[in-house]
Length: 211
Ligand code: ADP
Ligand code: MG
Ligand code: MG
Image (cartoon, rainbow, N blue to C red; front, top):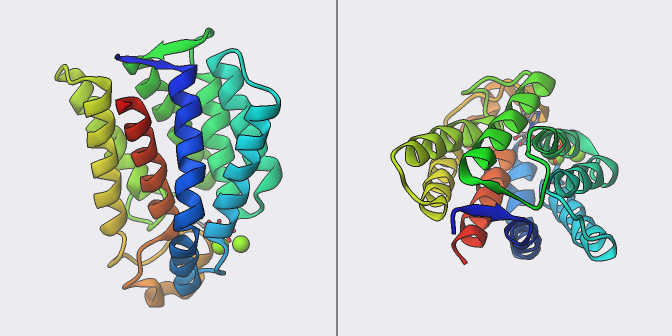
């Protein structure tokens, strides 16, 4: 199906939480090289709290779903990633249609608006060695795939591929935003942790959409 239902969204964040339980150590190791060694812990704490929140109060509409996810991230995750991923989801909620599902194009529109809000808040540009270096190529790949008539699952997989490549491509970059920027040239040679978590989230979405 080419519809992003509440069921797909629910599957997405639960799959993300499950993968974070095994990937948290890898994300934290990336953050220990150029940050403060908490990115995996931060993401796992946030997504564990999201699953608990969805269990306690299942959202009835897409905007409610994104709001619940965003508010949980803002309140449970300290640090840059909590406020930036929180902003992503809150702004996706503001830019998603009312109701219990959305089209692939509406999904792409909401994601793009969410990323624009992250940029407005964090002022990172492409090449600054942040999560934006995963989101930017992912949005481009998503748009290209959808406008050439590919299915939601195919387009989401292309977006995840692009995010993974974008994350890998942060390795030679000098960090210009966030904690890693304090290291200047010494940030070269390490993958940005936030770009890696963005790739994880977008891969989980692709897999949730393909089921
Ligand atoms: P903290 O740096 O506060 O400990 P985390 O370790 O959880 O927070 O998250 C760090 C990640 O946040 C970075 O790897 C980077 O991808 C992302 N990040 C930090 N600052 C910015 C920013 N201004 N814009 C976009 N992403 C950012
Ligand atoms: Mg950190
Ligand atoms: Mg921190």
